[in-house]
Amino acid sequence: MEIEALKVDVRDSENDAWQKVLTIEVPPDELAEDYDAILEDYQKRAVLPGFRKGRVPRNVLELQFGHSLEHEVLERAVKRSYERAVREQNLEPVSYPAIDKIRFDKGKPLTYEAKVDIRPSVTPRDYFGLDIKSNEVAVGDEDVEKALEELRQRTADWVPVERQAGEGDAVLVDYVRLNAKGKPIHRSETKDALVELDASGLLPEFRQNLLGKKTGDNANFSVTYPAEFGNEELRGKAVTFSLQVKGVRERKVRDLDDAFATEVVGMRDLAELRARVRLNLEGEAKLKALQSQEEAIVDQILAKNPFDLPESMVREYLEELLQRLRKEGREWTPEEEERFRVEYRPQAERRIKRDLLVDAIIRTEQVTVTDEEIDQTLRGAAPEEAPPQEAERLLRSPAQRDRARAHLAERKLFALLREKARLKMAV
Image 1 (cartoon, rainbow, N blue to C red):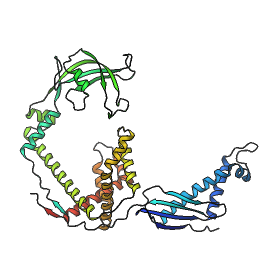
Image 2: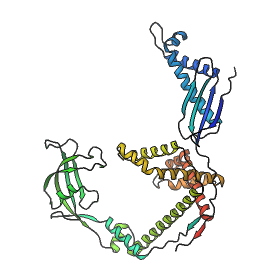
Image 3: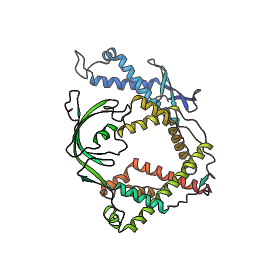
Image 4: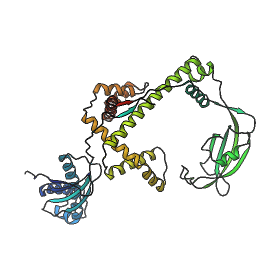
């Protein structure tokens, strides 16, 4: 028996430019098929007194589980019909649907209304002939010397000394947290911690109690953690520590000479190190100038193509970002999360609009990426020490290929936009 087609009416929401209202009607024959399939599943699983498993009559099941059966039919029919309606109407939802106005009577069609935010359809304009500054860069001798000095400082050694700890030193310590009775708290001990006394994040109580200490000294002191401290367990609390000094370390910065270049950095001599540092600085400056040009291009495109976003799209973007930060170890109070949502919202809106416009211009200009270009990019991304099978897995991964394709298309687009831009020389 042929089942009637799904009936779908789509109209614009009166409240939101990017919200669609779908009125969907599911024919009764389709509902009957769902009902029979679900009832058959119940028959296989149901265990009722007086009946063997799988032998419970339909009418008994309907009497016992009637409400649950109808609920499952409704749930299955709404999910399937909504997904089918979205597909047939070529809609791109960016939110879960809000289901309303459900009419569900046995033997009659199921009708309901689904409100859903859709991906904004953007028709980009005025993206050629934009103003950008020249990306000429110059790296001076003073920039090279500054970078070399920073390298010296980063590669300094901590050398043991037999004296009291002073400014700029580090102290090697074992420490443990104490409870209210002055006893060590289980699993709170830390051994061989190197505490730099000038470190910016060091709590003042630690610095005060370590200055002037020498090897073999002990100290007990209390620390009051700030209300915004990263570790939730310690946030805003007063904690007592017992600490033993195992050594004092003095920072020793090596001379900038051929030996430094060879032994620390692996260069032939200081002249080669200077040349390499200059080359790196020039590369960084060019990349920074290129990023600045692209930001200027994006700013102008956004200004020439204003549009609003669905609220759900911004909300989901912020929630996904918060989730990623949590996975990276960030700990948030509810107040901090809400403050983040408010403060970061302008950047989130800009990023979403930027991505939508870039994607639209790529389609308009028919920017294409070949499989060979994707292969080359993914081969270059594979670690040198990766086994051949790992590199092959990377090449065959649909997700990796999609990401590479999107990245390459965007790079090609910005190259095109820079080519068509009006270059302004920096004054």
